[in-house]
Length: 101
Image 1 (cartoon, rainbow, N blue to C red):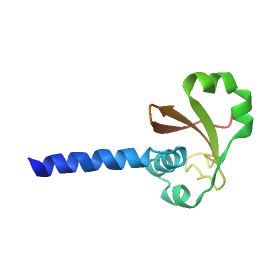
Image 2 (image 1 turned 90 degrees about the vertical axis):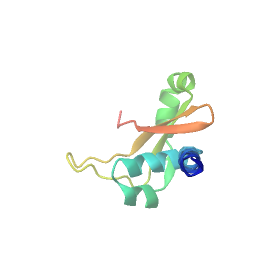
Image 3 (image 1 turned 60 degrees about the vertical axis):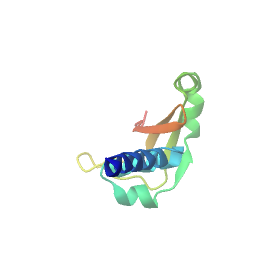
């Protein structure tokens, strides 16, 4: 029983660490999408354009747009997966692909 509780607590701690900051949440998301190299080597910068244009929408969602400096290339369409939206929920951050809107 103690072993099971220890494993569960360990998994919860890993999840919290991987979602503790916007950059870690974004790197985790890119890694889970299947692009581990891009998740590790790409730089992350704030996407000033989307943050300015969608300011009110992002304020309601408690979100901010970020851009990868060395984005992964999608295998099917050969498009760059450059822009992501990172939302804050309580003290954790969650990322999702935002697109080239």
